[in-house]
Length: 218
Image 1 (cartoon, rainbow, N blue to C red):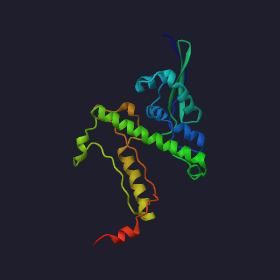
Image 2 (cartoon, rainbow, N blue to C red):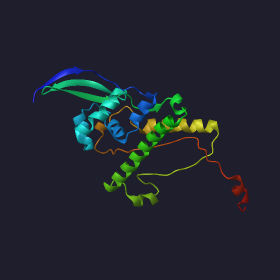
Image 3 (cartoon, rainbow, N blue to C red):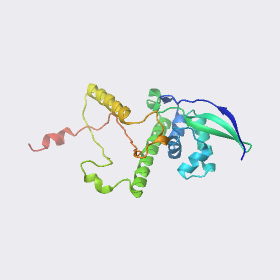
């Protein structure tokens, strides 16, 4: 098989990519595209992604093109293989964040975009956890242990704005300390295990029922 290098650049993903429009948000909200992004910490061809995901390349090209078109991934280099131009792609940024003006938009279309994104993230998390259970990486009996390998739950706290800000800051610092943002998961060590984390930290509309609270016996 003949192979000829076409172009090669030293691409470095940005620290953050800000999603500023609904179309890009919709592109980012597809579960398969999220999986593709998760495998692009290092430059990959579509064929390499296909092998890692177990999905035929023909089913990935459209999604990869959409990610590139909206700037979510970038071409790091190209080469000609047997007369065919082959591209290698990588994440455009290590983190994706919604622009403030996007999340404050009103209307059905904006709501649908955010709903699609949330459904995609949490559906993918659910599928990933179930796959880990089937693979033996998660033991359901560990839920009762004091130091399980996995945790899942939902909590509510009452915090002042100052305390909430401090919590956000501490949470970000914790992620930076233990996470590997900017490092490729392709180079994990033999004694390391990849862990996934899905989080949603936000002010809620929940308000305790004052009448019920007052009726509780002392």
